[in-house]
Length: 301
Image (cartoon, rainbow, N blue to C red; front, top):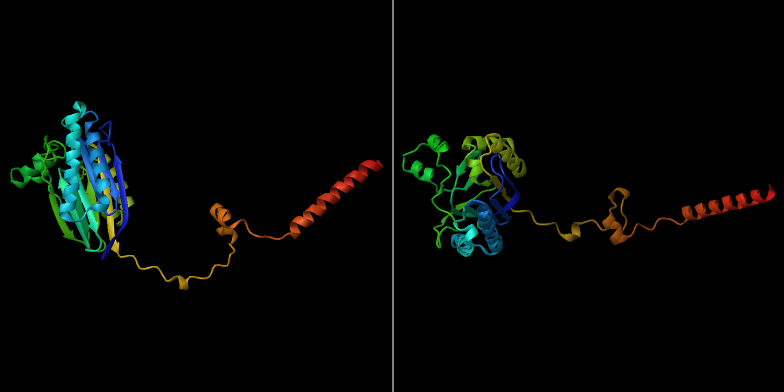
């Protein structure tokens, strides 16, 4: 069995856009990326609606059918809003969702659009999703090379999205996972700016730490031009947490706290401590003595 270990997520507007239309979800066992489109604020509305649908369904998702259903529910929610509100007509969003099944040591993916899911294992990066984009189709048909696709003027045109139609085709995949696996979900603001070998170099430099990797990936995408919003979600898989030791093995509480261990919460729960009365009594006697001497001196002068 595996467990979700450290997680990290970071989203940045980039260097060319005025607003951020990306959204993400980190609600273990569910993680997701949504990259909105539609102009004005419509893209932001679409990605936020998708993220809300994913969050609501996070605890009840099981298997490929379950995660595909959640994605289709998000599609219906976005499409209905677009039909009812002319201001956001035509809006849509990508969606890449990963759900961890710890008991089965597996991860299930659901995917629409060109946001990606990667697996970093044994120092190698593997793209798990297929881009539903114009250049992606041309590359798969052999009409474009990867290098040509990277600079193609229509590389941002996607062929499948949530919210643009009443129904949507959802790609799903389930794969067995292992301890040490690191998953990366990202919007095309990262994958369009960095080649896979550049992503690998960043992940290696981060030493497997999701937080460090997230910051470094976003910084690298911006350094490469930052042409779009860039969002990354990373989570690692670790061995099942060891059981807690039996309560009988814990040392018996003494009822006293060392000075360096005392906190406001400790004081509220346990009081400040019993202390001793003698220092306070001696101080009181000293104060009375000084006062008496001062009174006598004022009388004899």
